[in-house]
Image 1 (cartoon, helix red, strand yellow):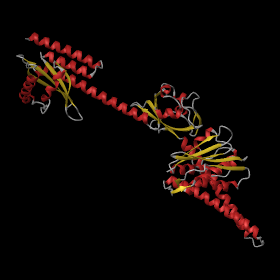
Image 2 (cartoon, rainbow, N blue to C red; image 1 turned 180 degrees about the vertical axis):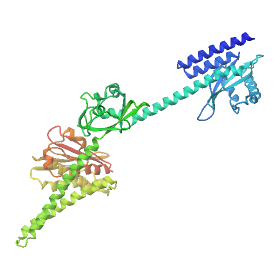
Image 3 (cartoon, rainbow, N blue to C red; image 1 turned 45 degrees about the horizontal axis):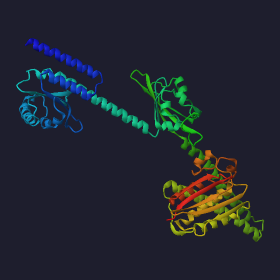
Image 4 (cartoon, rainbow, N blue to C red; image 1 turned 90 degrees about the vertical axis):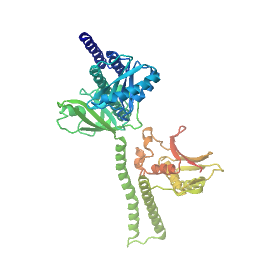
Length: 531
């Protein structure tokens, strides 16, 4: 008897050794639980067994491993899992009911099982699962079977706990990875040697580097500056002792120098970036990583430059008519002069014209403000005759320039449309004004209309200077003007095309432009729905 007990203890140690090796070998949880279950059944000469786990979210039981039970018969054992909770020290009270249910199961499954032993898998004070071992025939469980099997239950609990922790860590890693990847801001993580370990999609778009090409490279290979707005960059800060204990994050801003071999080239000629470097320190105060948050400031800097230009231009645009009005009014009020009716009419006409220019400028500024506030509205009318509206605008502008010839080409059956007549007239005025303004040498300006089944299109073609490729992306932005000598000599606030685009889109239309391929100049085209 003593020798048999020794043999069982040896066998138990061998099983535990095999299970421990499996635990450290990263074996699949299902396979590991099945190994533990097989050892539990064989150690006490059992016939079959199963391991069930408690699902934390629903507190329901699910079968995680079976041994000696055909797969198609597993569902027959569900009565053993219901309404028989484990309570420490009260397991003997459950055995009669569990035995009764087992007999019913054995009768249905025809497995000849007669007795059951149940052991809890406990982690801390929480029961995370149960091991069932079933006996058959006349065999009986030895008195200390539960004690012998308890070590297997503990190993199973460790395995499940580790697997769940690994799963939680893996899910959290995937979640954080998804957050970093989908972030609108660029994110880059550096190791202490300043080599890149994480490089997200947004940063890839900003810098032109593919993540696979950037990861592993040194920070200074990727982040190169044309010019800095801040006092120092990361290498200089590190030389000066950054990060000091308790030091704030490092902020670096400037114009980014893109690689000539970058896979993605932006429309903008320059990209402005702001990078916040945050050191990650360990318990000993050593830096383990640097987390860099990168923001594309290009649009912000462009808006900043445009607003400065706008203030300068508007100040000039407002000052000019006011000065002219004041000058003529002051002249007419002179007590020592007697003006002829012709001079009075001419002077008053100039005052009236400049007052109209001032009113138009203020109206444009108000329209831009309404767009910004979201209070831009249309007064829609039926039967807008776009051809007639165009002819009227062409006649008005044709008298203002002797160097330009404006022609209108519309088919006779051109349909009427729904729209806001006043604002569509504003669109034509803006396009014709630009066509004259940016073709200083004169030439032909052709306005043509085309009717389609669902929409109509109108094009304004000039023989002017065209639009450089690097300027095209911002041509419809507010306060935007071409950066050349002609535009600097030409009056304007840079609001015309911005408002034109807003009016066309408010009509559910669209507007675009192309540089002429068969000669100098540009063609602006917009389409409007017929209904």
